[in-house]
Length: 164
Image 1 (tube, one colour):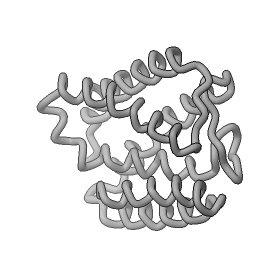
Image 2 (tube, rainbow, N blue to C red; image 1 turned 180 degrees about the horizontal axis):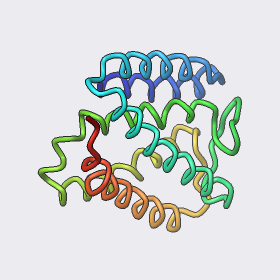
Image 3 (cartoon, rainbow, N blue to C red; image 1 turned 180 degrees about the vertical axis):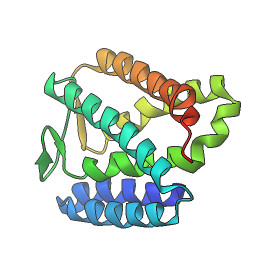
Image 4 (cartoon, one colour; image 1 turned 45 degrees about the vertical axis):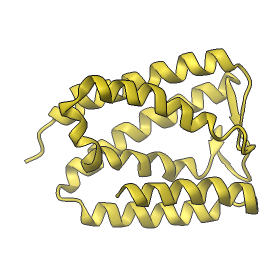
Protein backbone atom coordinates (compact mmCIF):
# COMPACT_ATOMS: atom_id res chain seq x y z
CA UNK A 1 0.00 0.00 0.00
CA UNK A 2 2.74 2.46 1.00
CA UNK A 3 4.77 1.51 -2.07
CA UNK A 4 1.78 2.22 -4.31
CA UNK A 5 1.45 5.71 -2.90
CA UNK A 6 5.19 6.31 -3.19
CA UNK A 7 5.17 5.19 -6.82
CA UNK A 8 2.20 7.49 -7.51
CA UNK A 9 4.03 10.41 -5.85
CA UNK A 10 7.17 9.72 -7.89
CA UNK A 11 5.23 9.49 -11.16
CA UNK A 12 3.32 12.70 -10.42
CA UNK A 13 6.44 14.65 -9.49
CA UNK A 14 8.91 13.30 -12.03
CA UNK A 15 6.36 13.00 -14.82
CA UNK A 16 5.84 16.73 -14.43
CA UNK A 17 9.52 17.61 -13.99
CA UNK A 18 11.08 15.36 -16.62
CA UNK A 19 8.35 15.14 -19.24
CA UNK A 20 6.19 18.20 -18.49
CA UNK A 21 3.25 15.82 -18.46
CA UNK A 22 0.60 14.96 -15.92
CA UNK A 23 -0.26 11.62 -17.58
CA UNK A 24 2.27 9.38 -15.79
CA UNK A 25 1.08 10.44 -12.36
CA UNK A 26 -2.59 10.45 -13.28
CA UNK A 27 -2.52 6.96 -14.81
CA UNK A 28 -0.34 5.49 -12.05
CA UNK A 29 -2.59 7.05 -9.39
CA UNK A 30 -5.78 5.75 -10.98
CA UNK A 31 -4.35 2.22 -11.19
CA UNK A 32 -3.16 2.37 -7.58
CA UNK A 33 -6.53 3.66 -6.35
CA UNK A 34 -8.38 0.95 -8.28
CA UNK A 35 -6.15 -1.76 -6.78
CA UNK A 36 -6.35 -0.27 -3.28
CA UNK A 37 -10.14 -0.10 -3.47
CA UNK A 38 -10.59 -3.62 -4.84
CA UNK A 39 -8.26 -5.04 -2.18
CA UNK A 40 -9.71 -3.11 0.76
CA UNK A 41 -11.43 -5.17 3.44
CA UNK A 42 -14.22 -2.65 3.97
CA UNK A 43 -14.98 -0.67 0.81
CA UNK A 44 -17.40 1.72 2.53
CA UNK A 45 -14.82 2.59 5.19
CA UNK A 46 -12.09 2.94 2.56
CA UNK A 47 -14.25 5.27 0.46
CA UNK A 48 -15.29 7.37 3.47
CA UNK A 49 -11.73 7.83 4.73
CA UNK A 50 -10.26 8.53 1.28
CA UNK A 51 -13.01 11.00 0.43
CA UNK A 52 -12.82 12.79 3.81
CA UNK A 53 -9.05 13.22 3.81
CA UNK A 54 -8.85 14.04 0.08
CA UNK A 55 -11.50 16.76 0.10
CA UNK A 56 -9.98 18.48 3.14
CA UNK A 57 -6.47 18.27 1.68
CA UNK A 58 -7.46 19.41 -1.79
CA UNK A 59 -9.39 22.37 -0.40
CA UNK A 60 -6.51 23.35 1.88
CA UNK A 61 -4.03 23.25 -0.99
CA UNK A 62 -6.43 25.22 -3.20
CA UNK A 63 -6.83 27.94 -0.58
CA UNK A 64 -3.09 28.33 -0.07
CA UNK A 65 -2.45 28.47 -3.80
CA UNK A 66 -5.31 30.95 -4.25
CA UNK A 67 -3.74 33.25 -1.63
CA UNK A 68 -0.32 32.78 -3.26
CA UNK A 69 1.36 31.19 -0.25
CA UNK A 70 2.78 28.74 -2.77
CA UNK A 71 2.07 27.63 -6.31
CA UNK A 72 2.78 24.57 -8.39
CA UNK A 73 4.47 24.36 -11.76
CA UNK A 74 2.33 22.06 -13.86
CA UNK A 75 1.35 21.27 -17.44
CA UNK A 76 -2.39 21.11 -16.62
CA UNK A 77 -4.45 22.43 -13.73
CA UNK A 78 -7.76 21.42 -12.18
CA UNK A 79 -8.90 24.53 -10.37
CA UNK A 80 -5.78 26.01 -8.82
CA UNK A 81 -3.88 22.74 -8.48
CA UNK A 82 -2.11 20.39 -10.88
CA UNK A 83 -4.49 17.79 -12.29
CA UNK A 84 -2.43 15.00 -10.73
CA UNK A 85 -3.35 16.26 -7.26
CA UNK A 86 -6.79 14.77 -8.00
CA UNK A 87 -5.18 11.32 -7.65
CA UNK A 88 -2.30 12.20 -5.33
CA UNK A 89 -4.55 13.26 -2.45
CA UNK A 90 -6.75 10.13 -2.63
CA UNK A 91 -3.63 7.96 -3.04
CA UNK A 92 -2.17 9.47 0.12
CA UNK A 93 -5.52 9.27 1.91
CA UNK A 94 -5.72 5.55 1.16
CA UNK A 95 -2.81 5.06 3.59
CA UNK A 96 -5.12 6.11 6.41
CA UNK A 97 -7.36 3.08 5.80
CA UNK A 98 -4.85 0.44 6.87
CA UNK A 99 -1.26 1.67 7.01
CA UNK A 100 -1.64 4.49 9.53
CA UNK A 101 -4.00 2.58 11.86
CA UNK A 102 -1.10 1.58 14.12
CA UNK A 103 -0.57 5.28 14.91
CA UNK A 104 -3.73 5.26 17.05
CA UNK A 105 -1.63 3.69 19.80
CA UNK A 106 0.99 6.43 19.54
CA UNK A 107 -1.06 9.60 19.19
CA UNK A 108 1.58 12.09 20.30
CA UNK A 109 4.18 10.58 17.97
CA UNK A 110 1.62 10.51 15.15
CA UNK A 111 0.82 14.19 15.64
CA UNK A 112 4.49 15.17 15.75
CA UNK A 113 5.39 13.12 12.68
CA UNK A 114 2.48 14.56 10.75
CA UNK A 115 3.33 18.14 11.75
CA UNK A 116 6.95 17.68 10.63
CA UNK A 117 6.80 15.32 7.64
CA UNK A 118 3.75 16.85 5.95
CA UNK A 119 5.33 20.28 5.42
CA UNK A 120 8.73 18.78 4.57
CA UNK A 121 7.18 16.69 1.80
CA UNK A 122 5.84 19.84 0.16
CA UNK A 123 9.07 21.72 0.80
CA UNK A 124 11.04 18.94 -0.95
CA UNK A 125 9.27 19.92 -4.18
CA UNK A 126 10.85 23.38 -4.05
CA UNK A 127 14.43 22.42 -4.98
CA UNK A 128 12.97 20.24 -7.73
CA UNK A 129 11.21 23.24 -9.23
CA UNK A 130 7.74 21.76 -8.79
CA UNK A 131 6.51 24.18 -6.15
CA UNK A 132 7.32 27.84 -5.58
CA UNK A 133 6.96 28.90 -1.96
CA UNK A 134 6.29 32.62 -1.89
CA UNK A 135 5.92 33.14 1.86
CA UNK A 136 8.18 30.66 3.61
CA UNK A 137 7.37 31.43 7.25
CA UNK A 138 3.63 31.56 6.65
CA UNK A 139 3.93 28.38 4.57
CA UNK A 140 5.50 26.46 7.46
CA UNK A 141 3.08 27.85 10.05
CA UNK A 142 0.01 26.97 8.01
CA UNK A 143 1.33 23.62 6.82
CA UNK A 144 2.40 22.50 10.28
CA UNK A 145 -0.97 23.51 11.71
CA UNK A 146 -2.88 21.80 8.90
CA UNK A 147 -1.00 18.51 9.13
CA UNK A 148 -1.30 18.48 12.89
CA UNK A 149 -5.07 18.96 12.69
CA UNK A 150 -5.44 16.48 9.82
CA UNK A 151 -3.86 13.72 11.92
CA UNK A 152 -5.89 14.81 14.95
CA UNK A 153 -9.08 14.59 12.84
CA UNK A 154 -8.10 11.12 11.67
CA UNK A 155 -7.15 9.78 15.10
CA UNK A 156 -10.10 11.26 16.98
CA UNK A 157 -12.91 11.08 14.45
CA UNK A 158 -12.31 8.97 11.35
CA UNK A 159 -10.93 5.98 13.24
CA UNK A 160 -13.98 5.94 15.50
CA UNK A 161 -16.60 5.78 12.77
CA UNK A 162 -18.10 2.29 12.59
CA UNK A 163 -18.83 0.59 9.28
CA UNK A 164 -20.78 -2.63 9.68
